[in-house]
Image 1 (cartoon, rainbow, N blue to C red):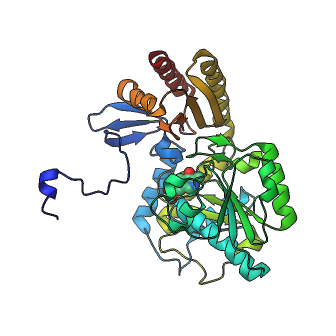
Image 2 (cartoon, protein in one colour):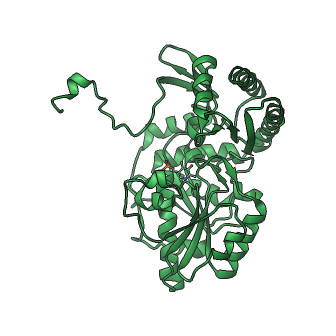
Image 3 (spheres, rainbow, N blue to C red):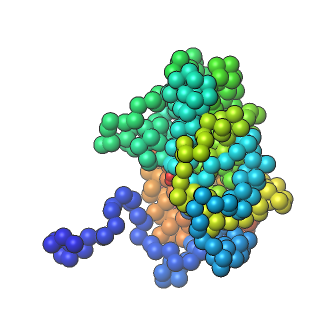
Length: 397
Ligand SMILES: *Cc1c(COP(=O)(O)O)cnc(C)c1O
């Protein structure tokens, strides 16, 4: 402890976040309670993580049961829940094999590594460059922040990792410069989340995919925010009519239990051999159990159809909101990944919503309010949120 710490009441936690001044103690479904027992409608879902709502019964039961038996064993042993989760992921995506890690950044880190190794070991053409896009967000490790197309994320961390090139997002003309001889992969979000909730234009995606296929360059989709049912399908790429070579997943995969995954086509997956990549915790019995219960709930039932009904309902109402209030310049996104661009400061809306209306929402950049309801949210909860949003825009107008 330093000499001054007792007088300055400095937090022992590094100040890497602008934390809101509330302390959440309990969550169930779409609601959370703070330490004064105040109840909030949580339309952040832990930033697109608690997609089944808080403490979902099916996942809780599975984790409770696993807690009694085995928490962790290393990846040097067979892990049946990890096998089962991988099977579910490949059965419900374009991929064939999965590598497990603990976060989104790690999933993208693995994507970058496998793309380079695929070029160097399988194709033997020594390509190494990964093309990403302006305003993208791919994580905070040195490689993934170098992949991220935002200077504010990279500030003070120079030199960046070499091997990345950025192009403007949704810019069809700029695709002429997509592929260089050293390019091994393109990495993209189909809706840029942190960058301001910007959906990819389908015509642009089609052209991009075509160029990658023609030139034998990998297409890697970062589905960390868009995946696990958030946009109306298990993965967002499924609405764009193509098959990616590599898919990175995290956030919603474990319902709040930390887990990340890299899903790849078999020809790419084989670039990783025993010893080429690894993780101590990746896909351990507890994490895999959480993931398995989560994806089982999302795929074995009419889960997605039911949530799509609520998504459509909310979007109809958002259109009404859009025409009603002048301070809304644009509403965009897909499913339950929603951005409301406002003329003022988005953070002012977020603060007022929390302090005066007990609604938790987020920002995505200075001018965009980001709304991420749990995918399990009900019509009654949506009506409650809309009622609050109406009041909020009327008050701020
Ligand atoms: C959150 C996010 C990441 C990083 O995930 P972490 O688990 O925070 O490392 C990467 N890409 C996208 C699109 C994200 O939304």
